[in-house]
Length: 394
View (tube, one colour):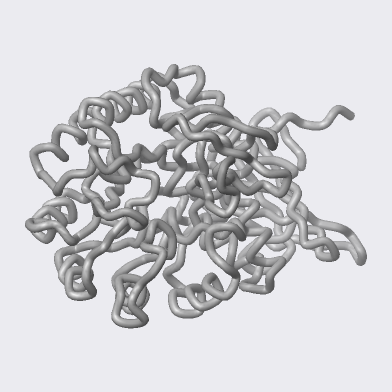
């Protein structure tokens, strides 16, 4: 990596093709992508577009479901995410009291409005609830007393508090009036995602016809027991219109389930971390934002302290999930990276959907891939051409 006063020059292998290339960045934009050469035995790093996470509840001790959220703390967590290759993300606000949701959305919007780095890294907000199923199991950790039916006036109140930043809303289409609500969201440009649902297959189909386009952490936030068929998982897998988001950390979905879902939805699947504020924190015992004792194990798994068989959320970022998929032979490195970068960027229709191409914003990750250990080590991350990792001392 070479830098002049006005430009940055990168040499490596393009993640899309594996071909050697030389990249020139000027004024935060990729201006040239040229064929490169590699000497025999020369180890070249990989050059890839920045990762986009559609569902982050918090990280490194910062919880997006707390108020007030200080702007400097959001800047801090954004920098930590950037250093790990996540150049864009949607802070995720979950089911809570109506006034509390409103405050959380307004707080995130204020942080984004006042901080240029956060504004560049946060293209919107993911609202997960409160219009989800009230049923145990599928409701997950969302509190039953705060669940309610879809209400357009209430959603407009949320959207006003968020300065119009809500890009995705997760809901269950089982409620009366859900189809009309979904259609209004779609007309206003908000992506409707099905999740935490107890909807029948027919209700799923009607939701898709009304404009639902995504499945939230498919396979998680479900009842522990379902009919063999039909059920809402099969129906979402069968719907060509739905883009599934998958948590690939190795804890939330068995490899066999990931394998099947990826085969069915290969060109549509997207990866999310769904990480909580305990992501990036050391192993140990903690108390969750809901006052529940949880443990982060040495292997990186987040469980209930009094029942380690039950998950208490996610605590790993997208590079972990990419590593897991490749190690398990579930897809190639290029495929895994695409599912976590340009694919969600294209789904959101943000400029970085172009990836590593002339004219694209210079959101770039440079990393090494150890083929023997199948391990990923990030060298540098650029956000609009600005380096986001501390350069090693010479």
